[in-house]
Image (cartoon, rainbow, N blue to C red; front, side, top):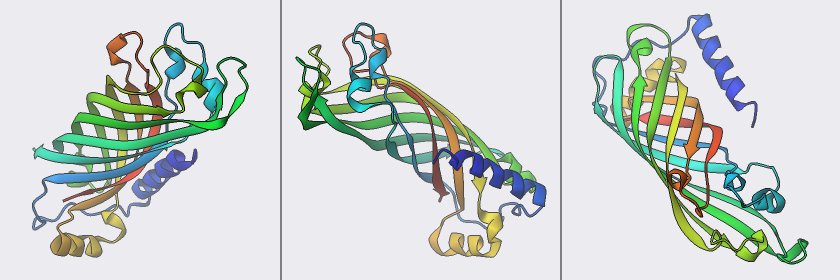
Length: 240
């Protein structure tokens, strides 16, 4: 899993250097208005960074980062030559589970404690597709920034050994930023890509990776479950 981003970068470099990058988009392609992305990446919420709480998350769940799965839908509302501006809505799911801790003895309890998170984003998305439009380079850099709201709940909250209101359920506001690089896949089979567009209305398909920052701490409020993280994701995307 940790090799996914280097592999993606190597594939992109190989495509550029080999000179077999895809042709420019066909003039007769179908209208393009939307994009869908499916992605995943490791997520380790910074619960223990809240001042005065100690390290209950690390003690219960350890230092491994389980995968968070995400899906995004974008409305591409403006498409000047070489640039795409979109509004994106993202949702996902994350779960981390372990045997809970007895708040009195600190020993592992018999019941399992779980933290479950439903992340949500409303983003402004900027994609720079000038390279595949005007050259034979199939790379599309992008930037996303927006508002975040993460719904969370804890099962068997006693296992976290905390009594400051962060067990049970709730939601935390914040903001997010990501930037990355998309590899346009049309160059692999240009004829198949054109047929896919004509028959299914799918303009382009991509694989991509990004750097992802979520600052989800209720904008610095105290006594809120902090779900911030710095991580990366990889995924697939289509435009239609």
